[in-house]
Each structure stands twice: as structure tokens, then as C-alpha cells.
Image (cartoon, rainbow, N blue to C red):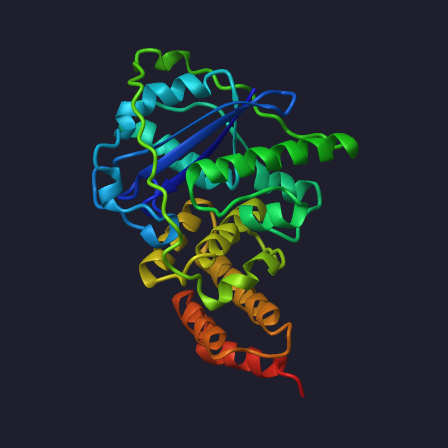
Length: 317
């Protein structure tokens, strides 16, 4: 049995000030059929940040259970399953940090659909939205925990079937043993997010995120960490430009994954070069795209003139 997990958070710093604000679990049988699904908003105990990404406001979590309230409910759903997430480094860090706040460890490793996409050679995509679009897997509008968990479950089924057809081996983690968390009683509490339409248009560069090539790996960097880090860049680009605070949080998270400052400089330069190439693929660049490129480069510490030179070289002669 698999437990596919997705979390929405107040930011990018697990274990620090950022907390889980919504989570979803979909259990999938070994035959690929969905067994059940569960989701809830979570009161993070602070003002909700990141609304422009996940669409959740502070007012939405009034009356929502805290993570301590649902820790037993969640543990009961995860016990005996293989944990799965898209870019599991990110989701696992938040789930594990929430349990650590309660004095419990969440043992075991996770299966990552992002890693599977790369392992099976579907490497022209990173974000969940892009992977699903490129592989023909259904995915509704993202950045809601239950919607993204459903898409990840469908992606998992697709990838397992693809591995079987190719006679490829998937490194399968052991099922999780949470017998030590039996003392956490389930509360049965849930609160679902209100239904709302999208309230903000994506930035001009968001349309190209799905077409970005896989980033080159700097010398000495862990390829899996580079893949996970650039997927987060794709993720925030889907809905907004990265603000300086977010860029700092990204760098701190990357450091916890073993990526050095020099690695990040190389990744950011490569990433921005790829953005310019894809944005210029149609032979023109709108004013909004130009401004987004310059601003995005600035927040990632890439010299403005380098980006302007890249744009000039990409213009039709």
C-alpha cells in the first residue's frame, strides 16, 4: 500500500518559522487503485503566508485543527504504507518537522515521483504540473493539497506501469512502521478549504516553466538535490516571481540539501539562461516577459547585464 502525501506550507523553511497549512493523503493499493483519500486545512499557529501560491488565507484556518490535533489521524493512515510525494525532499521535511515538534520521529524513507521521472528517462520536466502535462496524466489546477495528491497518485501509477513495461527496477522503501505512535489518539477533526476561483493571474514567465530543460549539474553537486531544488524554482514560478525573502529561504533549504553557494550560483545562471532561451523560442519577448526575467535574475543573484546579453544574443538577427 502507498500513501501519497502533499502539503501546502506557509513558506520554504521546514523546522523554522514555516509550518504546514494544508495536507492530504491518498492511499493507493498495489494494484494502482485509490483506496481512500483524506485532507484538511491545518492551523499553523501563526499568520498564513504564501497565499499567492496556495490560495489559503489566515481567515480560512480559523477553526481548523492544529497539526497536533491531526497527528494521530495522519499516523493511522501512514502506518504500514510506503510514503510517496512529488519532490519528497520538500514534503517529507515538513511532515517530519511537524512530528518532531511533538517529540516524535517519523522513521523510514520516501518514494519520490520526481526522482522516478528522472530515473525512467522522462527528464524534460520537473514540476508536478509539467510532469503530468508531458506524460498525459490528468491534473487539475494545482497548489491545493488534495488536488496535487490526486495528481501525484495518478503519476505514481503511470510511472510504476512504465517501469514494469521497461523491466526497470524501482528502489522501493520499506513500509512505514508507526507502532510507536499508537499513543497519539486520532481526533477525527478536519476542515476543508473554501471553494474559490483563481484570484491572481500568473506572471508572464509562468507559461514557459513547463518547457524548461533539466538543469545541468555543477561539479561536485548531488544530482538529486539539484533536481529537487530546481523543481522548487519551477513551483514558485508557476504562480509568482520570487521575492527576496523567498530566494533566501530557497538558498537555506538548498544548503540543508548539501548544495554550496558556488553550486547555487551555477544553477541560477543555468536556470536563467534556460528561461531566456524558452521565452525567446517564438522569436520575440514581451515587455512583461523582459521585466520578469530581469527581476527574477536579480532575486537569484544573476547579474542583470548577463541576462540582457543573453536576450540580445537570442534576438533574431
